[in-house]
Length: 241
Image (spheres, rainbow, N blue to C red):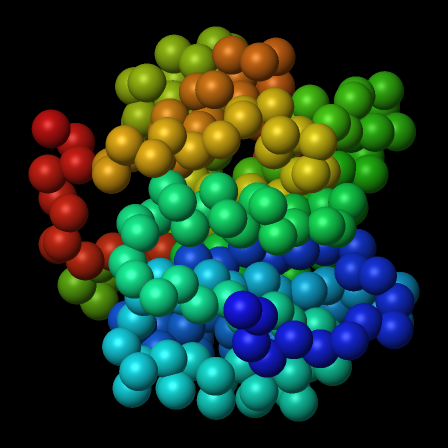
């Protein structure tokens, strides 16, 4: 049953899809970075945050509701919060987020990670440039350079989009399909289909490879300045294996 919905006077142009489980402190950082987006300050740039809570405890979920109420007051944008009674795992949640999305554009953001103030503005401008150059927006994912922070050390990484992107994603050195960097039309994400419910690791990579296999291509603004930050822990380090 939906929780903390806000009636939308104007349909959102962008749905931001956020999976959450047992990390309200991380969600607070994430939502604050969305509320501060420069793109959302234009009256015509309507966004909606969609959060699916994956079976968090009653205590954590109470904090989540408080954070969502704060976001609504702070941002003036829309938000939809859904709660699962039990933990179903990240692929299930991501598929549910896709089902809930209605806006013509989608972006992903993982709980505990943040966007910098101009991320959406820069990516929308780059997508407009691609369309003006004759590219099909429904076959593009717009990524960006990003920061990777671990143990207090923040490193900038760029996305090298030239050449064989399928091979580059498999190599994983200079191009990565991290969803928290991506902005695209809903149709462009639909090219990748659904998330594999039986794949607990490397979901971003699998989804990105499906997108490229369906004829899509990843692009990025030419400016190498990072537009978001991923906070890495040592948990799940067996994903490479």
